[in-house]
Image (cartoon, rainbow, N blue to C red; front, side, top):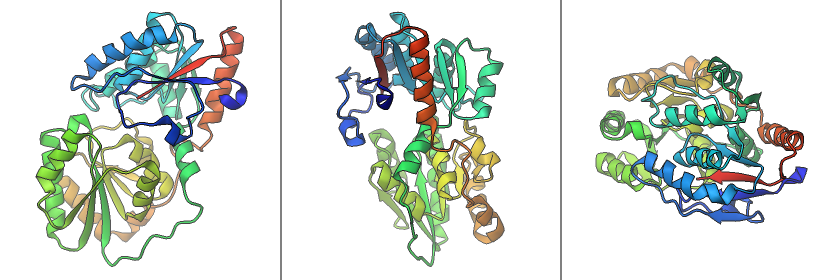
Length: 345
């Protein structure tokens, strides 16, 4: 947007207080911190963000929100409160199950229902929006996360030689808390007991999730617990893995581009494209199914090689160009101010 002469104003909600825009190349843009720290009740956080954001955007032409967080829904509601149009980046993702993921499925549907501009990463996402008869304008753009991934990937990467399979594990989704995390941990213990796997669990920044996983698997010497890391380091660790087990939406998007097979630790996913491309399998959180799938892949070289074929099911790395072009044209057509506010967690 800046290259098109549109200087974005960043509204940092405070949901993730460790975020520093300058560390991501955004230090030169106007910034306001709304001070809305994350809360155990995501719906309460939505209301807090909406109330504090509304007066901060009264003079802008468009508010841009991304994804399905409470910050995104709060940003959209705050803009609507003062009559400011909304653009939704990453629109149209659907699991078609309100409980998986919860509350993100409801949040995303609500944002799409009030958005004037809907930027759908894939044709499947756009089809979901058309079925819902949303009133906003739909554009298929690819996913901005893939733009970031391609921009940060090393030009050449050689994985270290290992004699044992390396499994990388991440889990943090709210619907996995409690029984779900216990089931995942049970599967990891069984896999560790084999003695022929190198298992690393990357802990999530959320202290509640990290503490629970330390309790569940911290005593197993065959599982390494590793501290949260930045995005470039996360990509390096993913590239070093032979197989990833994760419930993360971002990992579902990135693993196919990196060519690393992925087992999705969810019962439903709003990102089926990676499964359709053959790069991922949906295994849920049942220990028996997780263990059986890993053990099958250990002995099925043909399947694991097919899953490791690189593909681009979520975009070609040019989503930002398409999104900024549509925004620039829309602002011109609506004689709106050139000021755009982007609400970030």
